Image (cartoon, rainbow, N blue to C red):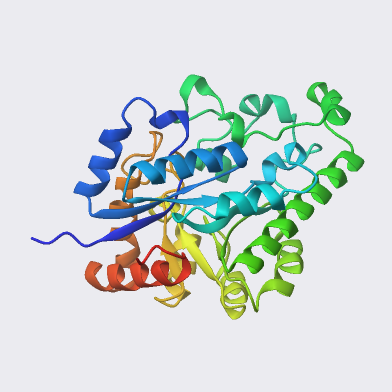
Length: 320
């Protein structure tokens, strides 16, 4: 029996979670029919690692960019370094970029995130309790890095001024990455979390005629999805689709046109049922796709054809 082909459009293969069994991870993905995997950068070093993996493995492609949670560690002008990274022939998009207001300095102690009480979504991602992560912590390139001016916040919750500084730097590097994407003809992988959707659109909309975005790990309602696709952009769904408490996400998927979404794992986070609480990996797109097909009322073959075609159009060079 032929196995339907799917892509994992958003994975963090450079994370230390995969260091011990990386060849087996790729082998399991291939056995599950996952034929292409995007390894997503979260800063310059992570982006370089994504490129290195893409050079070594035909099925791996790189997305290069700077994650908003690391905004304060970003250079004042990210664009020159990003342009250089984007020259590599296996770079298919810019990102992961965007805004994140979920972990602002006033929301929790940034340097002790693993000890804080997780929200339902942070628990789902394995954040807050270190679920699925080595030594119970968050990889360094997922932490909110503090400049010396904010280092005192390590012993206290930050101030409104601290929040504003983080927001401004997130907006700055988001804008810079959109500029590079527009200049070089790439689309962007957008992260947005917390109460930041309006600000995300405010920054993105001036670029919408030149750059398409995929709003990854989409966890909003159908009305928000419709605003995204009205701009010519896409959404992407993760293992949250399979969660018992993920009915709102399934409702959003049900309302999303078949050619306007992609599938992803966001691994090593968000392992789908029946693997919740374990490290996620690209092979688990299989479980995500099975639930997605049920929600959409279509065959796996039709879902495969639609989502792979969408990914090939969105990610430069992925269809080559």
